[in-house]
Image 1: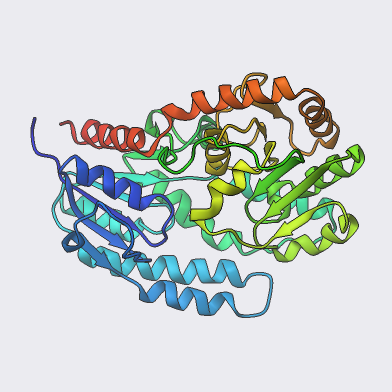
Image 2 (image 1 turned 60 degrees about the horizontal axis):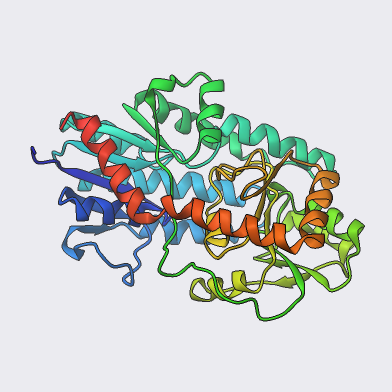
Length: 378
């Protein structure tokens, strides 16, 4: 088989390290350009890593500035600076794989050096993302920060100039096609989980425990989960929200002060134990490109409830339930069914566990390298 050479470039962590591990296993990684370097990550030759850490440090400083648009300003500065500096580390290869909004200057340089270009888009199209979030902010009377508009042009230009766009779900693909991206450019690559870390274990108590893991924010649909759980008022049950509170959470959390337990942070190595304590996992997001936590919970044997706008391909009625966004009635009805029927809960949890075994990181490695080869014609 002809040799294949790949450069991967990402200013954030995301799943770039997994892509680099897959390329390493296939013997095709030429260089891995990173904005956030984690020396604990294994499986990548450190001699191939190029660290571009200054943009992230500057971005962190900008995020501390007051104002609703500080995060968007930090992305604007961080991503563009990373892109410019990363472009200096390029070399002639078959494929350049860069992350969206961090790769326009790099992909142009890679093209000059003869590479084919794949751009990674893990979330919905930015136009769709902004529309959904703006609607939600208006529903709750929160001024919507307009900084997203600063970022859109570069996002879209990268889609235009790339040879291929990697997406993690059919939901993301659909939003891109709706916004005019040719379907033939899209490459579906399922993200994964680590089966050596996430597997079933006995539940330590009899409490019906509903789990959510992620940023506590309007985007994640948390008000609808809180409302559903509060309406049910179930005995021997609790709702546990695990994650940091976003600033916009102030508009809905006070109304549900005694309806949930908040855990600000759980280290990655302790997540399996958290899932083992649960009865059902809920990801009620208004838009979610993939929802990796849903697969981790499923791998631990939990039935999963997600919305139609979550990219995780949970099979409705088999592995849990798929419900519309912004629908506390539907969510409450599904929670009540799982609360009342332990056999259903166990059956769905086992079905979910078996189903997600196809979505391991090892499977992702093989899939992404297959797309590299197809793109390079090798």
